Amino acid sequence: MKRFKTKHPGVFYREADRIGGRGKEKVFYVVFKKEGKVYEEKVGRQYADNMTEAKAARIRSDRIEGKRQSRKEIREQRKQIIWTIEKLWEAYKESHPDLKSLPQEESKFRVHLSPLLGKKEPSKIVPLDIDRLRIKILKTKKPATARNVLELLRRIINFGQNKKITPPLGFKIEMPKVDNLKTEDLNDQQMEKLMTILQTGIIVEKDGTQTAVDGEARDAMLLALVSGMRRGEIFGLAWKDVDFRRGFITIRNPKGGREQTIPLSDSAREILERRPKDTPFVFPATREGKKKTPHRVDMAKEFRAIRTAAGLPADFRPMHGLRHLFASRLASSGQVDLYTIQRLLTHKSPTMTARYAHLRDETLRSAANLAGSITKQVFKKEDASQQA
Image (cartoon, rainbow, N blue to C red; front, side):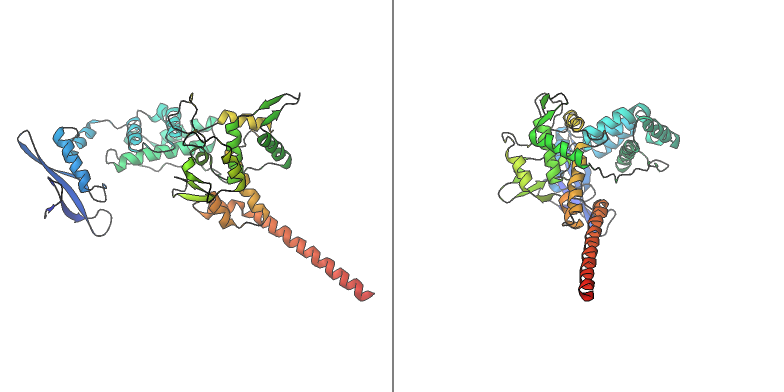
């Protein structure tokens, strides 16, 4: 195959058929001399490995200085490692250092996966192992937890398969059925009590004792209610993403994947304008927090205190529930179409927004019935005038 030179000394490429697609791609190689011996090594493909001539040049420099192993040495080393689920998980974390859900997934792995399957290789896992894991989780947790844990296991095994270090499972992992369409709602009394606490910042006990609520939790819950933003989006909101002048909030790395922009409502503006702005994030991490992130990742204890004081159901998820309330109120108003609600919630698919369709339909039905009753009244008046 013909060699093509690059502007970097000791780096060249050959053209080869693109893996999994049409056309050609560059396959980069490096040539260097070390301890009197000349080495020629393949370092990666243009698309399959996201390799460039600049990256290849850095690899060549590292190889000369002894800072990097060759691809062949890495393959041989991997063959010697017994790739258990525990080892794969460590390698997975190294490959995904910026994954936002890593702390939560680490907890799932340590609590559920590690005790039963951590020391096993993927090739040694059988369907009975998965059944035992699922049954154990369901004894104390909801089906959604079991599904999340099994999904994490599947992702870890797929990672090993994609990296060519472990074989795939010989069977398909069956996922528990989960109803993800729970739309939390509050009655008028619960909503009134919650809003009184959030607006005043005071919890009034039955004996008249007054307690101030946590200001951070109060502002976070209010922001969820008036913006419909997700918990992670609120905690990760940076001041650079709040455009007070134009009236927009930019949501980085949302659940749907693509960067989104939502309007900054007057209510959200009021909440944000009173927040301290001496740190990069709207909800900065506390000094005593154990998390390494520069912003808050949870306020579970503070949220529970407000939920209990407002007399809300024990299964009401404060931030997620308030996001649902935001959407439910818009849908039931009859003044906002589902596409607009989808955009405000940054749903990737209209399927998720469709859960609110019945609320809008009920409003339209009420309007139609009202129109019908008005029409009947008109006909009655006409009949009365004719008889007269």
